Each structure stands twice: as structure tokens, then as C-alpha cells.
Image 1 (cartoon, rainbow, N blue to C red):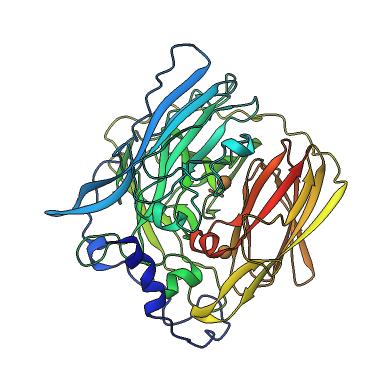
Image 2 (tube, rainbow, N blue to C red):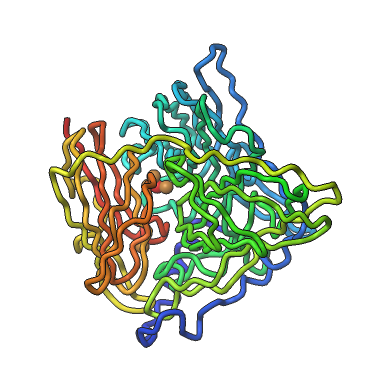
Length: 486
Ligand code: C2O
Ligand code: CU
Ligand code: CU
């Protein structure tokens, strides 16, 4: 399929349905099953571990590696090949693993027919190394990025394209992968680790990546089959009673993941920017908005030969009746026949998280909507993205409170480049709810009708993106430029 066709479908079916009655989670379109060919993906294979990107650096303390973004044909559905765009031919792409203090130099070769970039989502890299839309890598070109990973940055991040207007398409075609940063004194280093990258795939009747339509552009790509590490409903084997640390990344375009594991509680130990101060749990479920990551500790049931399902539970993201997700299975945990493992101890404290400095500036961002139903378009403070305009100005090193006011009929996961921030509180209909614990985030869910107040500081000068991480919204202009001045 040509790119023009991929985007063209947006125009083809531009109908004007009424606004879905304003009742959350209702609507005739809610919970549509995935497209037929996606449903043919082979389910139930063992969970793959993602290939690491080889470190070719000669010296310690450095990471160097080569990424090539290129078209590739992959056999996903019986006897047919699917054209994807992949990093190094891998679906999903290779994991970059670095350590705090490392100097990282990834090279990106663009063998795609259109501009791309590699954006290091969540990492505090200099603005000119962050793969912003104003720094495109042209077809045929190679760009070498270079940045240091500071102390305190250990955590689960990811990388993906951020080219102007085509991020959703590039991610939908397969370009996304984890970027894990490790710390020397990790208090959970004794636990076995599993990385689970959740992506969405929607194939058409010819087993090709399906074009997006008006509904996808309104509320984010719908009807995708959820994959974990590129596999549908993979099986993850655990010894009974064993305790593991899972790094779960939501790399879908728009799918909120309300995670719950049958018969098990989850213990949250980390968010976008790494460890919490202390484990939080037991939790029955954890909501992971698009682009967010969580680290959870899971202790498997002591019953041998048992199966449990990790699910994304039903979740509604709009009052238009169009963006409701039915409960879907993600992965099966299968306990082995081994005798139960000895219980693993979880430390009471994970790291120090001192309070942030008091804010000395305040900003107000209003998420705005024009049009209704499938004609809805979203902006920030009433404007659409213009990379040549500066929308917000901050001073490096200054702590600010931002009130992000969602005046639209749907939820938006708002992401800020270049830093990690903390949620202070959410307010809806005059009721404020303080964040229950301190957590570093680079993406915050701002539900419809809610104001989220975050405390944020940028430490480096340069232009940073602020945008909705529903990728179709980002591409359509729900993005602002923040200029950080020295
Ligand atoms: Cu993950 Cu600006 O993006
Ligand atoms: Cu980002
Ligand atoms: Cu949005």
C-alpha cells in the first residue's frame, strides 16, 4: 500500500455522525472485534524475548549501535507476507540497554520512502538529539545521535519515529522498541526480569497493515490486535511461587491498558521515569495510558500447571461513544510443574524521592476540541501544531506547575519531551484528588472534564514537544512547542 492510500482513507469516509449521546462506554461501535486478518495471527506461542541491539563500542561506559529503519516482509498470517517497516528487520525492534552514566551513540539509517527520526521517549537528552519533527532524517540519510544518560535516569523507556505528520503510520507499521536504562545499585536486581512491549496491529483482508479511517483519526487507531513482543496471546512460563519484575510498555497508538492478571495481585515498583520510593500494592489493576510504562512485581501462584490470563480490561476514553475498548486478553501465564520457588523478598524502600522544589511559575494548557463525532479535531489552547511557532516558554532549572485542562469529550495522554514530571492532583467537577504516591512520569492521562496539575522542571535549553500521545492526534496537530530558555 502506498502512503497516499494509507492517509487517503481518512478523506474517503468523512461522514458526520451525531455525538454519541454523551454516555461513557456506550455506543454501537464500542468494543469492535479486530479486523479478520489480524485475528488469524498465530496465538499461544511462547513469549519471545526481544533481541538486544548489539553494543559495538570499544570502550566501557559507551553504547554504540546501528539502527536501520527499512521496509521488510514478515510472515505473520498463514502463507502470506505482510509488509512492515522495521528497525533492523525485527518485529518489534531491538532493545537498547544502557547504564546510568553511559554515553550513547545510536546511528539511524533511513531506508524508508519518507522522512523519519528516532525519538528517545522519556529520556533527558539534549533537544537537538531528541529526534524532534524539526530534525527529520531524509530517505537515504544516516543520522548519528549522541547523548549521556545521567545518574537517576534508570528506567524503562522506548524509541519510535517522530516525523512530522507520520508518526502514527510509522508506529502502526512496526517501528517501536524498548530502551532500558540500568542503575548500579538496583534494589530489585535479584529478581528475574521480563520486558513486555505491547503494540497494536490491524491487518486488512490481504494481511497488510490496514489504512486508518475517520474513526481512527477521531479517537485513535481502533480494532487493533494487541501483541506482546510481537506475538498474539503469548504464553509466559513461570515456576510456581516465583517472583519476577515485569517491564510493561504501552507502545500502542491509542489503546489504554487497564492491566489485571487473573488470580494475582500486581505490585507497582516503577513508572515512566523509573523506580517509585517504595513498592505500591497489592493492586488488582493498573491503568497504563498510551506511551506510559510500568514496572510491576508479580509472584506466581503456587499451583503447578495452572494458567492465568493477563488482560486489558474494558476502558472507555470518550463521551462520544466511539472510543470504548472491550476487555481483551494479552498474555497467558502458565505455571510449570516444578516445586514452588522460595518466596522472594521485596525491599521496603526502592530509592529516595525527595519532594520537588516549590513551583515559582504556573502555566495553563487547555486541551481543545472543534467538531464532533468523527469530525472531531483536537488542539492545545485552541491551536494546531506549527513547528515554526513557539507556544510555551520556560526557563531551564525553574520548577513550574502546569494545569492541563481537558475541555474535550475524550481522554488524552499528554506527553512532555526532555524531562520527567510528577502528577500533583487531578480535579474534576470541583473535587480534587491528590496523587496517591510520588511517581516520575513523562506522560499523564488527562480524562475528559478533568484538570491534571503536574509539577515539571526542564533542565536543558532548547525546543521541546508537548503533545497528546494518541498518535493520530499528535499527527493531526495536538502538539505544542515549548521553548526552554537558558
Ligand atoms: Cu513518544 Cu513526542 O513522543
Ligand atoms: Cu517523547
Ligand atoms: Cu489526544
